[in-house]
Length: 319
Image 1 (cartoon, rainbow, N blue to C red):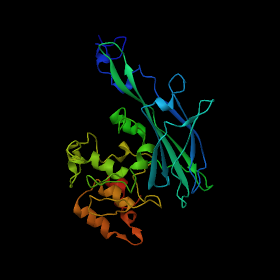
Image 2: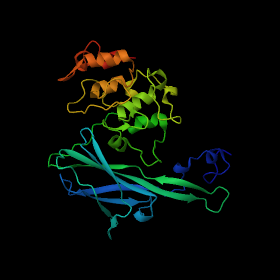
Image 3: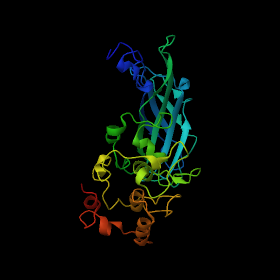
């Protein structure tokens, strides 16, 4: 039959239920209420809640994973610290408090963020022939806070989760715990590299190279289980709006973005604008072009490729 009464039954719908999307799960839900002592040299205290879909508090100590990630600066992340928060102190009101063992740098300024991730492994349909364990992971929550009294400024929005889900449906990685862009970019920042596979894991370079895998002029993989040079993008690669929002693919990029460590590329480090372009246009000639237009003053990309120019990004990517 098309649909039965239970997940995982013999109906067409039931037989194709993805365990982590089962209606039998209690659905872990996070919220971050406040951050105290978020100042240079201090150890921030995060106040948060963990509940199920019925509003019942989940015991943090009994969770499979509960991680808080402190990162900054949000203008362009360069550092992050991850701590297990399952021993967070509980209050009678249902809130938890966790004080980071790591102190913010004495030189910290601007906006930093705290992200919460994790969940519970649950046994579904216990005692039946369909018994199985599912990962019940909460949607990540990110809280931005100022460390120096300036207005808190969330990280720029370049792509959106809604556009990711247009192709990917449900979007999770790393044990299904990391499932929002605001979380991904804390680790996948301009300084991030995989020393094991000699590759940049910067978010723009990683995503561009994965989605252009088959057409890359370079080897790009993370071992035999992740041979990204075999990936064929099913859409139109000229359609930057398939992922980007608010014309964020256009030049010039905002001031203050960090150079990218591209240990597997032709240029290392590479400027923030060139990093975006060279992760798709991956030939040595393209890298040479970018290098010839970069000096101690910065990148000159926008001179020819900026909005309104003859070879603007929107013009050369027009469809």
